[in-house]
Image (cartoon, rainbow, N blue to C red; front, side, top):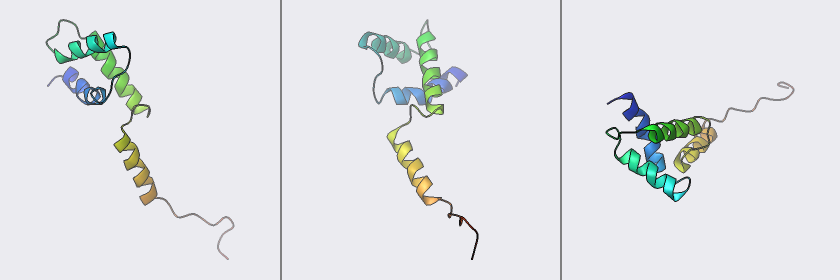
Length: 88
């Protein structure tokens, strides 16, 4: 597996759950990704996977299951509140 294959793995699964952009661009991107890494060009694949990875890192492209998991973790590991004025 090459670095390019690894970069493609996670974002392509996100893309498969919905489509972004206009239909012509989506079809062109899907066609290029379907023939990756043997396609003569991989510019769209590289730019799309890097963009999606960045959006995931900054929290703008998260899956609903990830949001629910994070909310559950926050509830489970909520710290005990500290008294405002110390113990009496």
